[in-house]
Image (cartoon, rainbow, N blue to C red; front, side, top):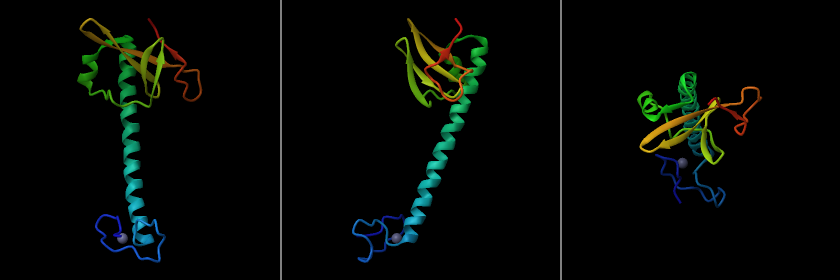
Length: 133
Ligand SMILES: [Zn+2]
């Protein structure tokens, strides 16, 4: 069998474990480093996007807790990025660090309902949310 590291076409020596995927420990390490770097980029990218979403939710929340969705679109809000999902009164919540949002439809109008995550709570308590009507 051939080593699976990109660019390496060496055969895996029979002296290595039968389930070995790399020809050498060196190849294994190089491949792992690449995977780790990718994972790091993915994580920091996600963190930055969640922070970005949070900052938009924060600004909007100061104005009103229900805002038409196009304001978010205009600012480049990442609707597909959130830490987790939760629900409150059967409303699906998309949870960031400090805020969460849900989507509300009134006929053709789509609004983003903003929820502030309980500030008095240490750590992440997505089921404790406060909102102002
Ligand atoms: Zn190799």
